[in-house]
Every structure is written in structure tokens, then in C-alpha cells.
Length: 638
Image (cartoon, rainbow, N blue to C red; front, side):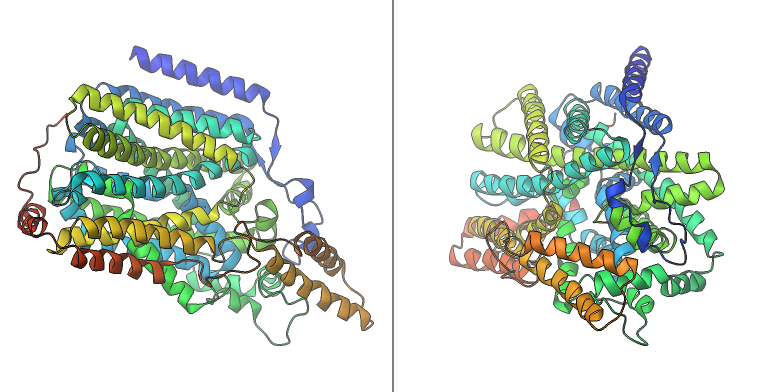
């Protein structure tokens, strides 16, 4: 109790200090305002601005930080052994783990990014929701129960069960760290930008603050603290999304037919599709641009790209190290299955809500305003919350926006904590304890190594995120899922279910799958190609100049588009991508359709080339263990 009050006082003092130095922050600055582009549904010429109420937002942040720090204090008393640190000693129930998995999986990219994609690209943004939901069917049917029975703390434990442990653990650790760093960097940069945009906290300070809290959670609380932070975050996220969805549905009279009719007939959406997505300066007679927003192909223009994306999402989740670690926290295989089913229900409901929020933001806020505030659409939910809340009462708008800001902050903390724990486990448990020390390290030494590694991983994450300021890190999420689906998943599945799988196949699958996935992403459309951007802008200003040359008078909106297109064209006409390319060598945004089969083939071919009878014979023991749980250490309840 005494520690609780100390933490509360520290948190409140921090909140007051921040509150004292922060100015009121407008999300949309004057340089981003595009009120002139707003048509009949927003006739006012006043600038579109949204303010985060400083006092309310900081207060909610302080409450969340205080609660989570109390959890860390509670968890620290129960974190004594490596089993406590990495797997909560298997004491998490199926229901708790289901909520924790949902909290680990529903990242800020999901809450903010998917709603933003839907608000800007319509149906194609919705495809991301479906992919992440279906992904857990793969997890449930293939990896949940066998991984819980066959592993201990990390993916390396599963893969090294019947192979040469040292090289396999080293390769597994490299892959785990690669996936975690890619995903972690994207989350950290997102956190910094979110805090900078909403509260005016400088990017580097925001990153450092998030990073320090993340390190505290993992170093002192381990998996126990991380689990409960994820559970609380999942509850807050579902609450916030539900409240916002009710407000959106009320605008359409709780009538889904009316809701999508409002999408198709919205003049701002029609203008957005015509000018910004289809790059048509002059509308085609009789073409329904609103209906086009509800059809595929505005973001993912290639059917093979959609298939490749689906493969990466559905299969990549089952290879995510921080997701696999969650199955080691439950006491039985039945609890592992139950946790996946509960997670699927929560995640499925959440992604349905994000779909409504995305289209609701497009209707009520407009894609133009959303894009002006953040080009990726990440502030769509925040803008929607402020607008709909204000229609109820000004204070309600401020509180709802502040609550969602705090939820997004908690979301980032929960996800990055899970990622740091996965990366530190791979380095300390797989590399230090089992490779360097040959498995000969006592409990005290193992826990100390885990905590030191967590600090190092956390500091490196902060540094990388700070260096990535101003960079387009969206492709890092694609990299994470590409590596997980192409390198991790093939070897996990083959290790569990194929007798002839061996050390050579494991290392080949991990390394070749990972290298091919990363290589294809680096030469794919995920990178920025300035000359392609210039060509799109040239198309716009040429059409408008042609209209002007024909004697027509351009509207103020068209004049603004003409000037903007020329400026962007001049800036980008001579540029190349970070790989020095003028255009993509690989046409798809996600490499899964190529890299996943390559990962499986590499693992199979090398296993057949370098067969080892001893490793094949050990499959029987693994098969019995993964189906029965025999040999798994019994749980010690806290």
C-alpha cells in the first residue's frame, strides 16, 4: 500500500510538471488545413482544427501509468525465476491469456492505422482487418497446443528439441530479434509521432519516455507484469472502440444499409476518390466514385498483391515470436486452445468495430481532413472522437479524445513490452544461457541475464526509433510479417509435424526465408520511389493545364491542386529509392506469395540433402509430447 501511494505521488507530480510546460496543441496546423477542399457537407470556410484538452489528457495518462506501475511492483515480488520472468510460471488462465493475446495483438497500428486506411481507401483497408482476424484460425489449428507442449520459453526451445541446439538456437534468435526489431521500431516511431501530434511532446522525449516505461515493465515485472498490462489495455481499447462505434451507428440511425448508403453518396468521399486515388482531375460522366470507394483496388490494385498480403497475415501471425511466447504462460494445452478462442472472439469484434470507425470517419470527418492531419490516416479515430463527442457536449468531445489518446498510449506500451520480452528472451535464454553457457547457468544468473538483456534491447529500441524520425517506417510492419511467415512459420510447422526435418533444414529455412523476404520488401512498392510520385503529380497538373488552355476557368480547389502538384513534381522528379532504384523490381507490396514457398522449400530441400537418422528418430518423442504434454514442467500457482 505504501508503495502504491509513492507511485501515485510520483505519477501525479510528473503529470503536473508536464501539464505546466505543455502548450495547448492543435492537431492540424495552418499548413495542413484544407478547408477549401471541403464541399457541401462542410460549407464553412473555417480551418479544420482539433485540440487535445491538455488537463484531461495528461490526467488520464497519469492514471494509466500509475496503475501499470502498481502492477509492476506487484509482479516484481512474484518474479524470482526464469519461469516467472519468461512465462509467468505457467500460471495464467486460458481466459486471462486470451485477453492478453488480444492485447498483445491489437496494436496501435491496428487501432489507428487500419481505421485510417479504411477512411482513405475504403474496401482495401477493410482487407487488412479480415486478414488479421483469420490469422488466428491458423494459430488455433496448427501451433497453439503443440507449441505449448513442446516448448518452454522461446521459439528456439521448440526448434532445438531434436536438432543440434547451438546453431539452431542462434539462427532462431537472429530471426526473433529481426522480427521484433522491425515491429518494435514501427511501434516506437508511431508512439513518438502520436505524442508529438496530440500533446506537443517533442519526438525524442516521447520516445524516451515510452522506452523507459517499457524497460521498467519488462525488467522488473517480466511476463507477469506484461500480461496484466496487456489485459488492461485490451479492456480499455474495446471500451473506447465500442463507445465510438455507438456514436457512429447513431448517426445512421443504427441502420447498416443507411450507413453504407451515406458512404456512397458522400460528396467529399467522391471527390477524394476521383482526385486523390484515381488521379482524375476532371470527373468522368456517369461514373459513381462513391460506389468505387466500397470496391477493391484503390490501395491493393493487383489481385496477386491481395493474395500475397492475405498469405503473410494469415501465416505470419503463427510465426510471431511474441505471440508464440504467450502459449508458454498457460498451465495446460486445453488452456492454450481456450485462450486462442477467446482471443479470436475479442480480436474479431475489435476489427469489426475498426471497420465501422474507418467508414464512419470518412463520412463524418472526410478523407481530405484526415489526410491533411496525417497522410497515413492515423488520426482518423481521434478526429472522429473529437467531432462526435463535441456533438454530444464540448466536454464529452475533449474527454473521449483524451481517453482514446490514453488508450493508444497504453496500447503501444503493452505491445512494445511483449516485443522486448521476446527479443530479450531470444538473446539471453537462447544465446547466452544455451549457446554461450551450454545450458549451465543457475536461476539467479539466468534472471540477471534476462534483465540485463531487456535493458539493452530497450535502449537499442529507443536509439533506433530516434534515428528513424522522419523516415517512412510503414514497410517495417510488412517486413515483420514477411519474416515471420517466410522464416519462422515453415520451420516451426515442419519441426512439429515432419519426421525428416533436421538441423540443416531448420537453419536453411530460417535464414533463406528471412533473407528472401527482406530482400523482396526492399525492392517492392513499399519503398518510396520519387519518380513514380512525380509521374502521378504530372498527370494531375497536365490535365488541369489542358482544361485551362481550352478556355475553362479553374475553381479555387483546382488551382490549389495544380500548384500543389507542380511543387511535389519538382521535388521528386529526379529522386530514387533508398536502394537506388527508380521503380520497384518486385511488383507486389507483400512478398509472401514468393517468400513463404521459398522458406518451406529451403527447409525441405536442405533437410533431404543432409539427413540425420538420430534427429529423425527423436521425432517420436516430440510427437508424443506435443500431443499429450508429457514432460512439460508442472505449474506452480502464485
